[in-house]
View (cartoon, rainbow, N blue to C red):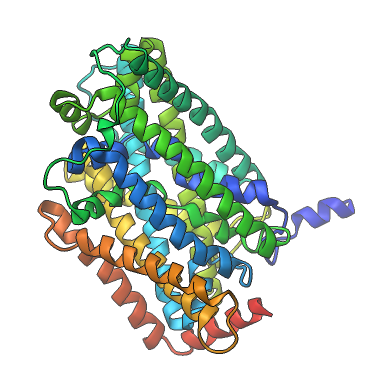
Amino acid sequence: MSANTAKDATPPTGLRRELKVTDAAAFSVGLIGPVGAMALLGVGAAGLIGRGATWAFVFAIIGVSLVAYGFIKLSRHISSTGSVYALVGRTLGPRAGFVAGCALLTAYVTIGTGSTIEIALFLDKVLARVHLIGGGSTEWMWTAVVALVLVVALSLSEVRVITRVLLVCELAGAVLVVALSVVVLARVGLGHAPGGQTLSWEFLKLPSGTGIGTIAGAAVFGFLAFAGFEGAAALGEETVDPKREIPRALKITVVVVGAFFLLTIVGQAVGYGTGAAGVKAFAAAEDPYGTLAGQYIGPAMSVLLDLIASVSLLAITLGTVNGAARVGYALVRDAGVPGPLARLSRRGAPAGMIAAVSGVILCLCIAQRLADIAVLDATFYSLTIGTIALLVAYGMATAGAFRFLFLGGEPRAPRWQGVVPVLALALIVYTIYKNVVGVEGAYRYFPYVVLAVLVAASVAVVAVPGLADRVRARIAQEAE
């Protein structure tokens, strides 16, 4: 046996440090899945604030930029595969870090569930458009199973392969969606829109009586669209020079994806039209890409965009599974939990957690299918739980950033910048409040799901002997 063969056969003792800024940024972008995210989230915002849906994303971009400040600053000092878990653990203490890590893990798993179900929604559109299935087909479970099998196979590859797959999927989709948006704006501007729409600033006008509270409620769709922007932080132990490259990757992600979201939401709002009929059609749309492409370009483009949306959603599932696996791996490793969950594959992937996360996603999909929940409802149910959990994790990280940077000794940033995390935390808390208080239907139960996870994590970190001390020691070791 050669030396190289023997080396490859030896199981790794830690994650491999081999990624650069492009890989880290690609992981964040892939976890967001901007093409797949905008396949439905603009519709959700339009359902709440009509023609002013663009403001939900403006609100979210401002909020995410403020939140990103804390992640960027902390990533210059702390690098760990635990992402929010390590950032909060270092700044607010190991108990808070463990709870924040569980919140982020919950967010990734439920968002991954929603994207897996949504794959079927758009793939069925493709199959119906090419007449391979009937237009009324509602079965999505088998598509979800096939998607998860493919995700697990890719996830067990080297992490560099994963980041490359994510980048290619999103670049291909982004080019097509940008092309659609440009064509829509050009035809409307030139007076050749299929519905006779004309280009104006009407898409920025809010319906009468719309206040900041309503915008904040709709902004949950914008925050959800950005879910995963912090994903690069989970590559802290796999990136070369992480304290330099990860902050750069986070900046690139927020700027590039923010610009893409603004162009896309404006294209959708203008494409459907700002009149009552257009707004109603936009708010009720199940396939905005395919509908607009069919009206403004042709049926072939509809099929292609629905297909690329499915691919982008597959990339989101791939990103969330790998993000969740790395956060979960850090949690069980640092807590000293023995067994397969803390094991790495020969390629350096957290194989045990990849299998566990994928299994949970599969169980959540099966449960919703057995409950006969419609595919669109099943998607939004999972995504809403994920967004609430994600906002909790963001809030804890932002509070930790404020304490770390500005309290307890010499400030690590100019004092005037202290207003940034304060504003970020205020926006997060208000957005959570607007999406917890006064909601109706099944959505009123989702905050209790997240609360149950937080309580369980809090009890575990207090009740399990030595858990907090082991977490503290591991975070301190990584800091050194």
